[in-house]
Length: 164
Figure 1 (cartoon, rainbow, N blue to C red):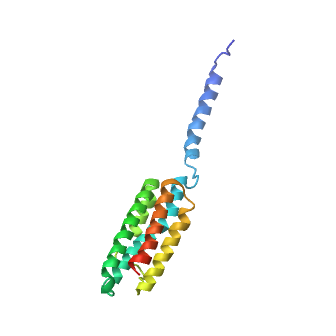
Figure 2: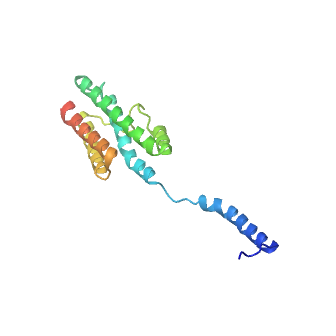
Figure 3: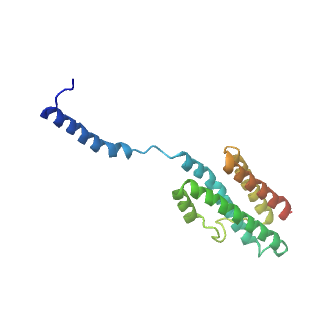
Protein backbone atom coordinates (compact mmCIF):
# COMPACT_ATOMS: atom_id res chain seq x y z
CA UNK A 1 0.00 0.00 0.00
CA UNK A 2 1.48 3.32 -1.03
CA UNK A 3 0.77 6.47 0.89
CA UNK A 4 -1.42 8.97 -0.88
CA UNK A 5 0.24 12.09 -2.17
CA UNK A 6 -1.38 15.14 -0.81
CA UNK A 7 -0.68 18.79 -1.31
CA UNK A 8 1.39 19.08 1.90
CA UNK A 9 3.73 16.18 0.92
CA UNK A 10 4.31 17.63 -2.56
CA UNK A 11 5.08 21.09 -1.16
CA UNK A 12 7.47 19.69 1.48
CA UNK A 13 9.27 17.62 -1.15
CA UNK A 14 9.55 20.62 -3.45
CA UNK A 15 10.95 22.74 -0.63
CA UNK A 16 13.58 20.10 0.17
CA UNK A 17 14.50 19.89 -3.51
CA UNK A 18 14.91 23.66 -3.80
CA UNK A 19 17.00 23.74 -0.62
CA UNK A 20 19.22 21.04 -2.09
CA UNK A 21 19.63 23.02 -5.30
CA UNK A 22 20.58 26.12 -3.33
CA UNK A 23 23.11 24.32 -1.11
CA UNK A 24 24.73 22.13 -3.79
CA UNK A 25 26.71 24.92 -5.52
CA UNK A 26 28.03 26.09 -2.18
CA UNK A 27 29.26 22.58 -1.38
CA UNK A 28 30.81 22.11 -4.81
CA UNK A 29 32.55 25.49 -4.51
CA UNK A 30 34.36 24.47 -1.34
CA UNK A 31 38.12 24.51 -1.79
CA UNK A 32 39.54 21.09 -1.10
CA UNK A 33 43.15 22.13 -1.59
CA UNK A 34 45.49 21.21 -4.40
CA UNK A 35 45.05 17.97 -6.29
CA UNK A 36 47.73 15.30 -6.36
CA UNK A 37 48.76 16.44 -9.87
CA UNK A 38 49.04 20.05 -8.70
CA UNK A 39 51.30 18.97 -5.85
CA UNK A 40 53.50 17.00 -8.26
CA UNK A 41 53.72 20.03 -10.54
CA UNK A 42 54.76 22.16 -7.56
CA UNK A 43 57.53 19.68 -6.77
CA UNK A 44 58.84 19.82 -10.35
CA UNK A 45 58.80 23.61 -10.60
CA UNK A 46 62.11 24.29 -8.77
CA UNK A 47 63.94 21.84 -11.06
CA UNK A 48 62.52 23.58 -14.14
CA UNK A 49 63.49 26.98 -12.77
CA UNK A 50 67.00 25.74 -11.95
CA UNK A 51 67.41 24.37 -15.49
CA UNK A 52 66.42 27.71 -16.99
CA UNK A 53 68.74 29.59 -14.63
CA UNK A 54 71.64 27.24 -15.40
CA UNK A 55 71.17 27.69 -19.15
CA UNK A 56 71.02 31.46 -18.74
CA UNK A 57 74.13 31.44 -16.55
CA UNK A 58 76.11 29.38 -19.06
CA UNK A 59 74.92 31.65 -21.86
CA UNK A 60 76.11 34.68 -19.89
CA UNK A 61 79.60 33.24 -19.32
CA UNK A 62 80.42 32.57 -22.99
CA UNK A 63 81.82 36.04 -23.69
CA UNK A 64 84.06 36.01 -20.61
CA UNK A 65 85.36 32.47 -21.26
CA UNK A 66 86.05 32.06 -25.00
CA UNK A 67 88.08 28.90 -24.39
CA UNK A 68 84.96 27.28 -22.91
CA UNK A 69 82.50 28.72 -25.44
CA UNK A 70 81.75 25.34 -27.03
CA UNK A 71 81.35 23.62 -23.65
CA UNK A 72 79.14 26.42 -22.35
CA UNK A 73 77.07 26.10 -25.52
CA UNK A 74 76.52 22.42 -24.74
CA UNK A 75 75.55 23.26 -21.15
CA UNK A 76 73.13 25.92 -22.40
CA UNK A 77 71.54 23.60 -24.95
CA UNK A 78 71.19 20.67 -22.55
CA UNK A 79 69.79 22.70 -19.70
CA UNK A 80 67.31 24.34 -22.11
CA UNK A 81 66.17 20.82 -23.10
CA UNK A 82 65.82 19.89 -19.41
CA UNK A 83 63.77 23.02 -18.73
CA UNK A 84 61.50 22.28 -21.71
CA UNK A 85 60.92 18.65 -20.67
CA UNK A 86 60.16 19.65 -17.09
CA UNK A 87 57.82 22.46 -18.19
CA UNK A 88 55.98 20.04 -20.48
CA UNK A 89 55.39 17.64 -17.58
CA UNK A 90 54.30 20.52 -15.35
CA UNK A 91 51.89 21.64 -18.09
CA UNK A 92 50.46 18.14 -18.35
CA UNK A 93 49.95 17.97 -14.59
CA UNK A 94 48.73 21.51 -13.95
CA UNK A 95 48.30 23.96 -16.83
CA UNK A 96 47.85 26.89 -14.42
CA UNK A 97 51.19 26.21 -12.71
CA UNK A 98 52.86 25.95 -16.09
CA UNK A 99 51.40 29.30 -17.09
CA UNK A 100 52.77 31.00 -13.99
CA UNK A 101 56.14 29.25 -14.49
CA UNK A 102 56.44 30.47 -18.07
CA UNK A 103 55.56 34.00 -16.99
CA UNK A 104 58.30 34.07 -14.36
CA UNK A 105 61.00 32.06 -16.14
CA UNK A 106 60.84 32.13 -19.93
CA UNK A 107 63.15 29.61 -21.60
CA UNK A 108 65.69 32.19 -22.78
CA UNK A 109 65.19 35.16 -20.51
CA UNK A 110 68.79 36.38 -20.72
CA UNK A 111 70.94 36.22 -17.62
CA UNK A 112 69.61 35.37 -14.18
CA UNK A 113 69.40 38.00 -11.43
CA UNK A 114 72.73 36.96 -9.91
CA UNK A 115 74.62 35.07 -12.59
CA UNK A 116 77.76 33.23 -11.62
CA UNK A 117 80.81 35.28 -12.43
CA UNK A 118 83.17 32.34 -12.93
CA UNK A 119 83.18 28.83 -14.26
CA UNK A 120 83.70 27.56 -10.72
CA UNK A 121 80.52 29.33 -9.63
CA UNK A 122 78.65 27.76 -12.56
CA UNK A 123 80.02 24.33 -11.63
CA UNK A 124 78.72 24.82 -8.08
CA UNK A 125 75.34 25.96 -9.42
CA UNK A 126 75.12 22.87 -11.64
CA UNK A 127 76.04 20.65 -8.71
CA UNK A 128 73.20 22.16 -6.64
CA UNK A 129 70.79 21.69 -9.54
CA UNK A 130 71.79 18.04 -9.98
CA UNK A 131 71.37 17.36 -6.25
CA UNK A 132 68.00 19.12 -6.20
CA UNK A 133 66.71 17.03 -9.14
CA UNK A 134 67.98 13.83 -7.51
CA UNK A 135 66.42 14.70 -4.15
CA UNK A 136 63.02 15.36 -5.69
CA UNK A 137 63.33 12.39 -8.06
CA UNK A 138 63.61 9.84 -5.27
CA UNK A 139 60.24 11.00 -3.94
CA UNK A 140 58.54 10.41 -7.30
CA UNK A 141 57.63 7.30 -9.23
CA UNK A 142 57.28 6.30 -12.86
CA UNK A 143 58.01 8.77 -15.61
CA UNK A 144 58.71 11.74 -13.30
CA UNK A 145 61.29 9.76 -11.32
CA UNK A 146 63.03 8.77 -14.53
CA UNK A 147 62.87 12.31 -15.88
CA UNK A 148 64.44 13.79 -12.76
CA UNK A 149 67.07 11.04 -12.56
CA UNK A 150 67.99 11.73 -16.17
CA UNK A 151 68.16 15.48 -15.53
CA UNK A 152 70.33 14.92 -12.46
CA UNK A 153 72.71 12.56 -14.26
CA UNK A 154 72.98 14.80 -17.29
CA UNK A 155 73.61 17.89 -15.16
CA UNK A 156 76.33 16.07 -13.23
CA UNK A 157 77.92 15.02 -16.53
CA UNK A 158 77.79 18.58 -17.83
CA UNK A 159 79.60 19.77 -14.72
CA UNK A 160 82.21 17.03 -14.64
CA UNK A 161 82.87 16.55 -18.36
CA UNK A 162 81.96 19.71 -20.26
CA UNK A 163 83.31 22.10 -17.65
CA UNK A 164 86.36 20.00 -16.66
